[in-house]
Image 1 (cartoon, rainbow, N blue to C red):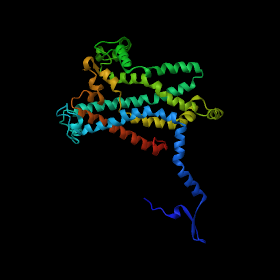
Image 2 (cartoon, rainbow, N blue to C red):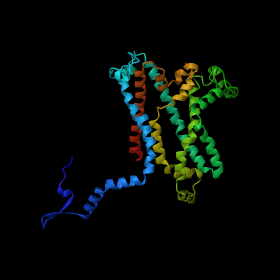
Image 3 (cartoon, one colour):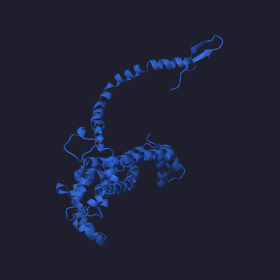
Image 4 (cartoon, rainbow, N blue to C red):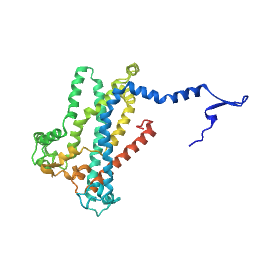
Length: 353
């Protein structure tokens, strides 16, 4: 702590040898004295708005912060006496993490295979799923009829509000996933001919060759429209004078997109990219689980390429190792968002924090 002196707050008069307080310092002191009073008055004036925060705070405390106590179970022994309460288990140190990095461990191969699948699905999702909402928002901006734009947006947003079970069941029904081909898969095979290999005979969803493509396509169909809302909101906020200036300079539609729209929404794009990278490894557990399992949890043929860390952890009997794998996956995701934020701050001066 710095040592405070009178000279930091008072003005010394050499003639009289006394200290006096400046007008600016008097104002600062008065503001400091009445600071909490002003906060209290603002709180009372808007108490209805703050009351609406109570349910959200309750949800976050009960379902986000209190469950963090269970993270201590990662460092406890779950292999002995599985029925014992977590608070009664002995500390295990980093043994659960060591199991994941030891080649002789029975969990080593399955975990890293699941992590590889998670990373591949997440990478493809970022590669195709991030630019498409931006392109879609640019297309929305070029639709001049408000009625047509509204109808198109509602149709594209609709899959986001459908249940994951409904979407997964629809994909399995159309493309086949229970040792038989669906109508859409049969049509594709009739058109594509030799493009589809013999694995497709048991259903495209059940195929190790086509599973990732089907998962990414279904994920894009579900999320692209909804994700474009943020970018479309940023585009319509661009000043019309910028378009007029570009038109005067002879810029066409593509030039306006390149030199007016994209630079104007660049900060939004960067922020959304950082957030997307932060959730890169959080691949949807429900959809993958429905795609790679069938009745009573029986594994499909695509389990080798579709099993992610969350699916692997859910089917593991050793809860300690399962939680260690999930935590390692989340820690890597946290490092990714911190690293991308640092790179963005250095390169573009735009960052989350």
